[in-house]
Length: 155
Image 1 (cartoon, rainbow, N blue to C red):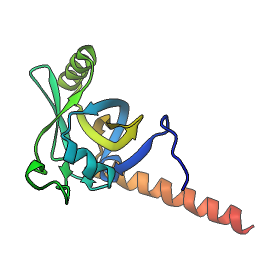
Image 2: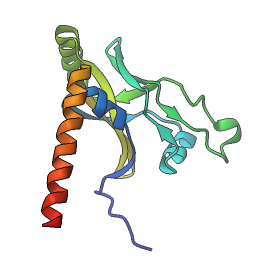
Image 3: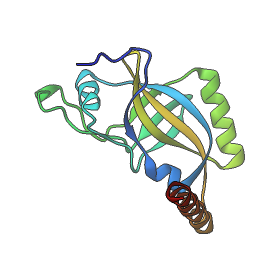
Image 4: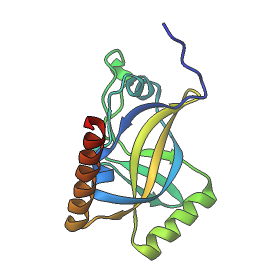
């Protein structure tokens, strides 16, 4: 069995819907405050970011709607799968994000969950919502790129 390097990012889950619905302007890395059974469940890939979002409240940042399935062997130690989880970031980063969100009407969306040096991390995107015509344009560009690559491959 191949041994995984500790410095390597091990992506567990991604929020593909977020990249479809939003323009990602900036990304940030935040630690997640978890309990032991939640970490084990995330290691198995039992996490869903589909309808999750981040909120800033009282100088702290939280992730809402992130579903971490209960660990099978966790019995009484399992927590509520949909509980609000606190994120770990520097105070100045949180304050800067809060100011940006309030001024420009942007939103914070979780993009992916991964392990880095054995610690669970969450990649957060500072995002601006896409309109329907933006989504269509993105799909058209992706299709055109795919057609060009297919033509290059066949010729």
